[in-house]
Image (cartoon, rainbow, N blue to C red; front, side, top):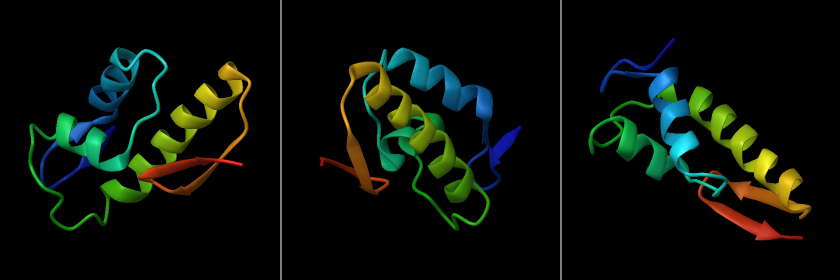
Length: 81
């Protein structure tokens, strides 16, 4: 599924990047930069909501696997509760 129309990349690109992170939390800007080839976010209409969902799912899985409780304050910051 295509994630971004402005700087085309798809869900497979995002999942491959997350797999390479090997259980480390990620940020929206980090994922976008890597998957878009370093391009800046242009409009964010299509990609930001979907990327946010994928990233939150990834980061929550890490929290569960590590046995920690954390709260996502925004897509860029994790803070232990």
